[in-house]
Image 1 (cartoon, rainbow, N blue to C red):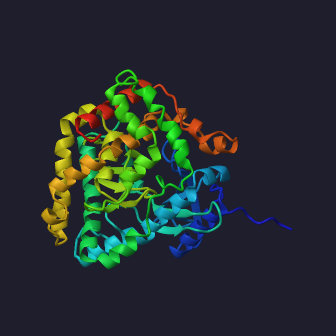
Image 2: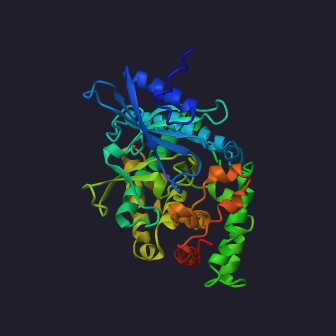
Length: 427
């Protein structure tokens, strides 16, 4: 008996992902599709999934436009999926792409906002062609448009963001925040349906990862010891955040009972922000941002997205020169969008309210910095192969305890952030 021919996309090692891809190609009118598959990321780019870049073309018809996709699937290691509770992160992103973003896009379309270029596609996000969730273990998958052919590229996570990049990021975030604020104000029943389908997954008390993360962030004491030795006032401030890290951070990401909340991206660091430049190769003129990776999407105070991006992806020198101005620019952009959506920003989210949120929640930037900066600054070859290490039985806390040649810069950034939090009165 002749064995069956291998799948044309067998370079993807998950049969479920192969089937989704082949079904999508058929729906898009490819009769005899060919698949060119390559890795969609490298070490340090994505911690909760595996990415494949796929180009679908019609065999024998060079004139038919190709389909360029990103497939995002669950890690191959079953132990990694279980111990990192990856399913909950994929479920959250599934609901973000399938329910939340399309509902916000429809609201904008009803308001005749010309930013919506395609029905159901929220501005500054990638088109979601297909998504599966809640199936057999390890099969949850997203099939997204590959934004690279449209001119979007990834910025070097080790370099950090400058004024032009931060302005573009704040613009895209302000639009997301304003759209959700306006929809909640004008259509509260409809909005309640979408705000409840996404929730906290990282700093959830049921997340077994929290205990491991607390082990990892305790290393911060050593990183800042030169400037904040044990017993110093700054050390004691840090101690209040690090000891009981999961509980402290969970309180910061919870919805506010007294000030406005919004649908937030939740994971606004460099690798989840694709940039399009005014001219190809001109890295000083970021023109547009595409937000990707909504696994940590949550309903929470909008300032969380801002302080995450700023304190995990910029330097103290940049913040001293630009941050106060950029925060005001963000508020101006958000206010402008709210007015376009028939809301009064002075009533819904005045500048004084945003300042109050920063004072109350701004230290979330340090919470994320102590967790992420050591990883963001490391070279790819210095980062662990998580699948292999989980399968070998290694402890996750040990895996994430990355040491690298970036240690001096890591120590400076974390010490700078702690110092700034104290000076701003956020701790």
